[in-house]
Length: 161
Image 1 (cartoon, rainbow, N blue to C red):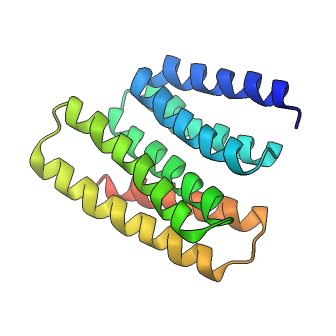
Image 2 (tube, rainbow, N blue to C red):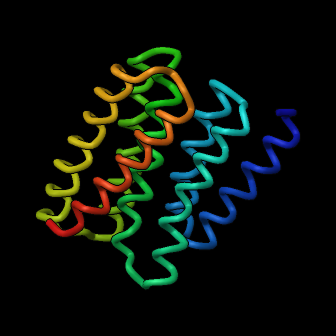
């Protein structure tokens, strides 16, 4: 993909995320886009990041702010998968940075300690699942989609905790 098109599409994705969720969630989208741009400029990766915005749209439609957690887990898993294709430890660092950004937002939102602990345990378990799935899967787009979908659905299911 030409760099100019990549930049325009990336800015549109960040703007859309910011309109739907505010600056913190636009920032989280930006982290995923930086990882994607740094490693690979294929359109399919942008589509995966764009698909994570489903959770923000659903949050707006339903009024459920807790749906930002599946959004964040989708992006953290995409950052890990994107970077881990080059270097596993770069993927780990990228996934942790994405989760760190999510937790900074949650702390700024004054989430209770209990909620933060539960989110941390669940997020860590989901990221570990993504790491194991990455190690066992063939390097194909269909598997990347399946792993990301599983990560965001696990996050969504965990909202009942």
